[in-house]
Figure (cartoon, rainbow, N blue to C red):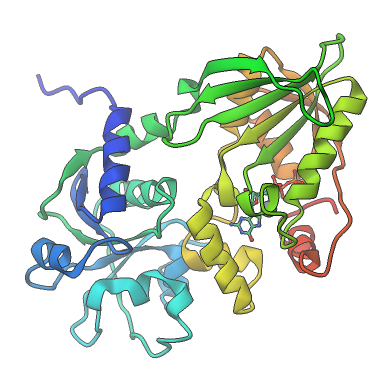
Length: 354
Ligand SMILES: Nc1nc2c(ncn2[C@@H]2O[C@H](COP(=O)(O)OP(=O)(O)OP(=O)(O)O)[C@@H](O)[C@H]2O)c(=O)[nH]1
Ligand SMILES: [Zn+2]
């Protein structure tokens, strides 16, 4: 009896490693070669007759004037670009990377063809994001692959329910010398999510800050966003409240990773705002899964919380996973000339209460 095998999250981890090395993978009916990391020899081996079409996200396809193929407002939906003979696909990087658009303006015209196995194609784009890479592949139904997996393996890899507490210890911090740090093992590869417990439960819902990792802001003092000051102000507010939790999620770049965030910054240097930069790269405007934060709160035994945020999307995201946000506590920090456009964009385009 050919029952489908149980989802194997380890297959997704092997596939992420293969993508980062430029090796082809197979997801269901599709063999896929990552454009960002594959070298010409691998492309030659994968596609000797140079006929393989290119799988992109709808957000990226739209910037290539393939808007007619884009499902409305779904920037990370799959689009397949025909391997038309008149297009120099050499390596495909000019298709994959919007940073090159100014340098290679006259590409195309491109033609979109029907996406074979859309679920597998969508899973491939999602895996590229989890790997912190550009969502762009050469695709062949019958191509070679180093790793074979299914869309269900990727779902299992990302499933927050697999999060678990791995270690905890006292951690005196500037705003709270009695703090306790808790590390959570995440199935998504490098970097654990962390919680800092401040003060002692007092029968009231804890004051919680859901802080998404921003290396540039948290560690380097970036003025381009408000993350660094928000982190410090959150620790201070929680300490003053007497009881609360800082959740530090390894969801850099609103879930697209540091390299892709810096690509988004490079597009912002070209004049795009933080919303359009993400969609031009082929990602959703916000690719974070707040189910991870809800799972952390669940493991910490907290269901009712007060949430420090200006982002109603966080409240909805947590409530969709069973957390009761009894109060949204504004968390606005003064702007500077380098981040006022970024914050104005969040106010005007992503519903932030600023
Ligand atoms: N893709 C992308 N991510 C960014 C950009 N600027 C900051 N980030 C990321 O955005 C996240 C910061 O999000 P938060 O501080 O949680 O901000 P928020 O979701 O807007 O909500 P609140 O601060 O809670 O109001 C971090 O992961 C940063 O790395 C950007 O221009 N593009
Ligand atoms: Zn930031």
